[in-house]
Image 1 (tube, rainbow, N blue to C red):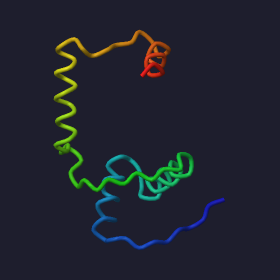
Image 2 (image 1 turned 90 degrees about the vertical axis):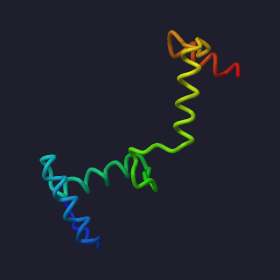
Image 3 (image 1 turned 180 degrees about the horizontal axis):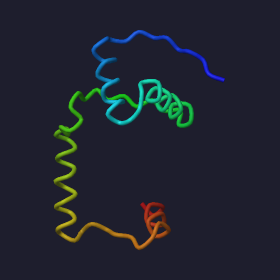
Length: 92
């Protein structure tokens, strides 16, 4: 059984979303149903306040730099399997 949900959104956003959905072979109803199903199953709502998600924060860039340096220096610990990783975490 299906039902209808009505809600208001900006006309420009709706038009853009319809275009993107169409390019993916979907319609807007399909997209919204996918989001609703994920919301119900995961009980999570993902919201990003970063308008340009392709532009990482300074904090993230610094963490990446540190990780690369640690890897190059050979100080980065590696694990052969998940059990050894979990055992290591329990020791810390």
